[in-house]
Length: 470
Ligand SMILES: Cc1cc2nc3c(=O)[nH]c(=O)nc-3n(C[C@H](O)[C@H](O)[C@H](O)COP(=O)(O)O)c2cc1C
Image 1 (cartoon, helix red, strand yellow):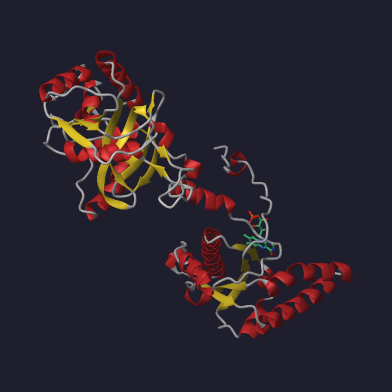
Image 2 (tube, helix red, strand yellow; image 1 turned 90 degrees about the vertical axis):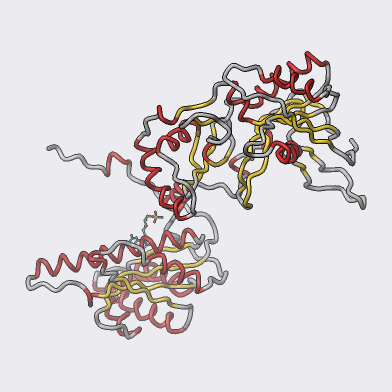
């Protein structure tokens, strides 16, 4: 197929305001007649979604909507963000309408990006307040725009006996650029894409990956004539674009599947993945170097953990792989040996116990020591409250440790929490010359994983949610 070097884009001016039940095809034929135009083989008609929605009765009165709890929650969470971005406030009724039209919320920031029931990912589920008369009335996207395009194409072909294509278009914003452009949301007679793979370029090289989004390009071109506001040109004739006629087409072929969509993520899915994938990595770690900056970034996030009286009693000590660390681990292991000998354990048992962690503690790219700083714990005159306050300190440090582990998981680093420091507090304090208010609580080995590890079983929900009898 050879592309021509001229394409005509002609707006049909004489389309009246469309009402529910109107026959769009009839109006198009009348408008063509008034322009003195006859359809020709290879013509493409780009039709604005608004008139399809109106003729299909796909409008809604926001005043008749009662927002659900979810809509009110969303309203509260996005309104401030919208104001910060200088956008007008979306009311809860509009949010409810968006929810009703959507399969899924993809992003809730200053705008709502959702996946519509037909599969488009766009702002506000494509609901539009413009180009429709009546306070509170909005247009919804057509339920099946491919069907609508097909019906119009067949009706026009029956009347004119011409092989034409129909594109239903809307204007969509784009993730990486400012400015909405005409985008095809329904097609008939034309493939959404023009697959150039295997064809030769100017210099004879075979194109490897070029797929042209032809219907979107045509919709964008048509929009230059259609306009966005009061131009009143909802149908545009494109003449001169070469394409292969195809009866069986759907816009769905260009809706990227979730698995291949590198940019799509949903906060809930992402956080769930991090929460579930974090593992205690106890195997030897990869030799690959870990940047200290990454560890510091994770500790930075661990600062946001909750703590009793917001005391933030956690102190992190980052230990590089060096002689000082090795000496510390050897000293700790000497103490462990003595403890186990006192317990009456065999030499084999003792050496295997010591050997298990020794290598990791010494060889892990980083070993992080987490301490509880007791300096700022509340002071009480009685032992009971003093002990409880101490527990609060430990709980707070543990919450930061959890944040730290999750942050490491987010950075794809492998780590394990070890309690060895608890049993060798004095040695650590002495070797590292820590302030005497610091109590060593845990070690974290950190590095890159070598291989995937098994997920230990979790208790069932009904085992851990205990229902007291009364
Ligand atoms: C307070 C605490 C202390 C831990 N101490 C050790 C330890 O000394 N040695 C060890 O191999 N794992 C230790 N772990 C890791 C646990 O064995 C691990 O979290 C548990 O088996 C669940 O596995 P997962 O973290 O991969 O889900 C500790 C974990 C916590 C929370």
